[in-house]
Length: 530
Image (cartoon, rainbow, N blue to C red):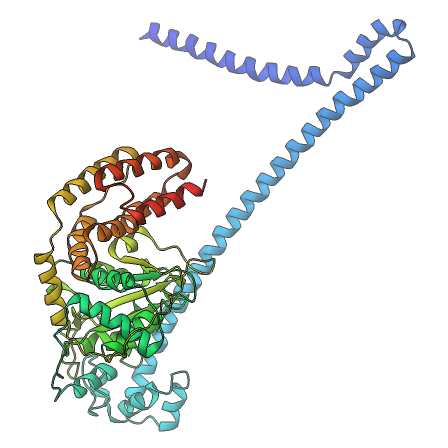
């Protein structure tokens, strides 16, 4: 043990001596740099041989060298001071954020306390109408009368139980609009439907209606893409330049089906599902219902085609306010398409609510319009993968069409035609084999995979597109361009530019020369970016 300690002491001393030599030599180097007496002695050895030019150069050299050192020292001091200020700013910001967080928590606590106290006051039978009206001066005109009526009839005992119902029947309906839908459909009788059109006839009839009745002109391919897309997904995204009829298309479809579309203008402040469906107001004990929620609820009563338009959908982040619907619409079992509006059931709740949950019906189509400019957010891959994109990049060309009447067509009939189209026009095995080969090629050269979702959509979209009057390869072409090759935008286009030409050649080999026009046009646009 003594031998080890002796060795370790010698080992440590040798290492510390090395560290000391580094520090010592740095210090000695600095001293030598600024050893002015030494420079004077050195100059005395050579000055006798200096001429005028020698003295001038000597003085200039001395001034320049030490000016450089002065600049370096000054910059070092500035960097140190800047770092110190930066650190102080960071610390100050962290302290400020902590104070803001503390204040925010205090505000929330005080707000909840105020709401609890106000709710107790409203429940007291001795409260005057003037006092109640003063409490509700910040509430909107629609909510105030119902809540005031509730205050007049609620007893102190009832306020002890949050689920206790007011004596007034109207005030007990916390879902005012949805309860109105229940009343509307109490004696509802389904209208006669015009269920005698094929998908191809439906596309032509809808296009003629838009032309003859509304002076809107769409290519027949756009209408086919719309119906084929709605067969494979409930969400369609119409994007393109302004003035190409993006909002007009679903609006016109609502007129054609004699069931006007509900248009929800998305606002930049939309951040969660409350903007879409509404929320329960703990103070008024009522649910603030939106038109979108009302339309979804009403769709549970009928077999009509219901269209909800999310106008300017990407002016806020779609994956925020529409996140829950994206997940729900992806579930394979429609019986699981439930959203929870409130955590529990109350007496007087709408008939179609089950323990506060609403089942999203199948007969609702969601159509969003999107502009791609500086005022909007980029739509994420999560949304694009679950939707079908239809690009409206040019105005429609006017044409002549016969005067066409609107039709009331049931959703069940359209769904039956979708299912029959999948049976009658399945994707051919040769096409599926070529898609598999293309998938392997894209994975090898671009590290992008098709994914099971795209294959599933392909086996629905393409047959319905064929039933609408298109061809199998045209449908496949559009789906590949918008669902697969669109992913190339997230890659380094400079690195894949040469690979794109090889991809076009390979697709010519698989599907025929110049057949996949949508894909080629898109890939060529990517090439032109560099």
